[in-house]
Image 1 (cartoon, helix red, strand yellow):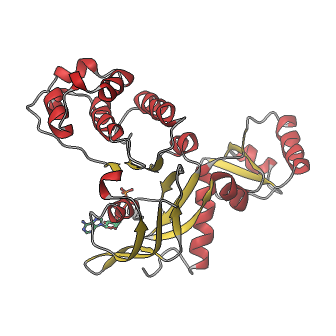
Image 2 (image 1 turned 45 degrees about the vertical axis):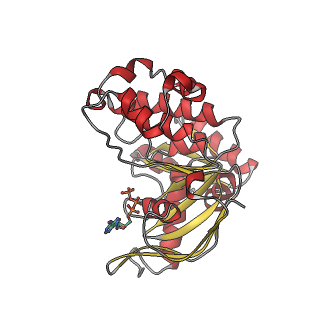
Image 3 (image 1 turned 180 degrees about the vertical axis):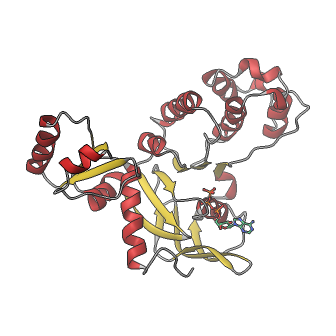
Length: 296
Ligand SMILES: Nc1ncnc2c1ncn2[C@@H]1O[C@H](COP(=O)(O)OP(=O)(O)OP(=O)(O)O)[C@@H](O)[C@H]1O
């Protein structure tokens, strides 16, 4: 076990921003995706673990603070300095003599950026600068908080592929906070789902999908024609423009697929959709707590 939280409460004034009242454990080598709506407490959780905010309760870990690395949402550096100087000063090293740093710079194709000023870097290049510095720490536990926010689709995609490949054969534990479900499908093994400061659920992606969606789901457009076609079939909560049809076994999968094929309806079958899984998990959680708003 790398880190465990038994009971944790973070308050900002009167507001309880985070109340973890069930065990949350990070094991060695795990890749945990942390999801939840805006204000759910994701960053607050990361900050508590890193000791960057006051909390009540217990966080047990054998790791020292310097064995945890973090990439926070916002990264600001001195605007007027060349990036090379920023990097070497913060890391207290010289690129010339640091093989691991050279490897990272080349892996992220960052050579040309070294001689630019920070303010002249693009959003994606700024993110790569911080990622390189975070990765150089090679920490047993690393946090990435919204590492691709603000980037366009292609830049996000390329950055995620780089991150996934870098960590593929490595043992570092990762906690990845993201609003992009496809990123977590690529990077995370487990999902921690937070809502209004509480844990909705925590488990492997497969386990949570089975629990809230069944064996698989068929996703089709929410059109009048499609609604009529599947009117007698069970549906899960889904984004407004979609209909999600769950199936619990192979027979029902064949039945639904047959119906859709016969009616010439385009569909996507998924057994890993994190967005629909989390939407349904949140709905059940809120129902158990007696409504959308609950006391912290
Ligand atoms: N320094 C602070 N002072 C006061 N309230 C804060 C502070 N930091 C966070 N909060 C509040 O605590 C709650 C949780 O915030 P947090 O940043 O952890 O959410 P989040 O899940 O990371 O959200 P987002 O997805 O928008 O980044 C929010 O209601 C937020 O307004």
